[in-house]
View (cartoon, rainbow, N blue to C red):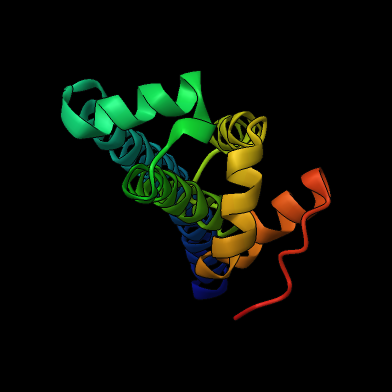
Length: 158
């Protein structure tokens, strides 16, 4: 075996090592992407859970939320402020989640769950009005969805 044959064998082994390295890096990237998506979904869930715990813990927030569900017209100006902040907290979580989905760090199932939750809020005229007053707070993915789904103009900014 001469030096040329040894060189050819070396190149073959080197090429196989490069391919193996690329396959390993690809697996690591997939695992990292899955971990990022799981972390993003957990973060979204945590932010919504904080709001739900606040409402369910009793007190003023729970009273206002129950009044809103039973008779939103009976809300006082102070109650409306509390209801508005409940919505703002939820929609900020939805907005962040949809941005993460757009960037690829949140899975489609969680994105679709956000869409279902937003649809639920918009079953109430109160939140359609709230959106009209507050849509400028949110990013493009949420604004585009609301505009397409409900025909509400989200492009007019303050």
